[in-house]
Length: 213
Image 1 (cartoon, rainbow, N blue to C red):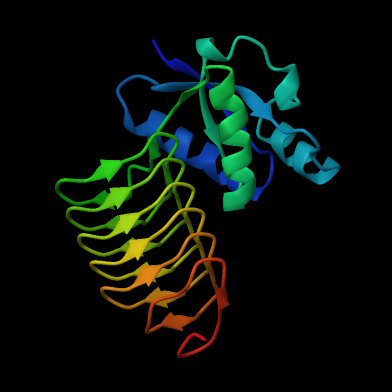
Image 2: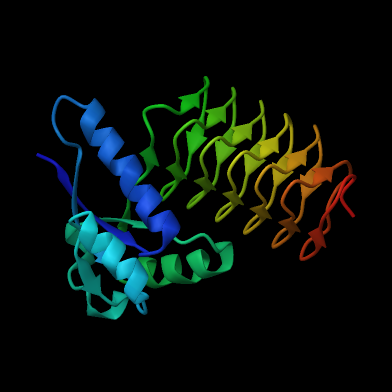
């Protein structure tokens, strides 16, 4: 029997997460997940109309959802900081977390995927990679061998995290950015889109450009 699942977030990544769920179900002999609906405290009319067009229901705000122990949850919100705050609220009431990997993603040997992680289509994860809880790997992202990503990290479409890289908690790696081998990206840092990171990045800083500064 398919497990009930609630998606938190009605925006773009929420609907991309629904794509991942649909692909998982389509690839299985029997559906794995039964999406009960989508939770969002303040969805826009545009986001609601796009959900409705796909046949999914808006369940209301997070505070309005009852009996979280009966469902698995995914926080499908792009901002690492917001995702962290919402996960803390769900943890406080005993919510359980799903982990979703698109069937077209390639995950190498000896992986470790944290609860609440979403791996989208076309992602490549090399050998001996650790993904912390609530990590988001957007379409086409590449994670090199022996890298470690902390909790609530977002790697946006087409970004490359090379081998032996340590990415600490709540880091956002922008679209098409590249982080070279063996570097460390500090907690709450932001790597701008298309940046090329050639040296360690301090916690709480934003780097952009080629080379990234």
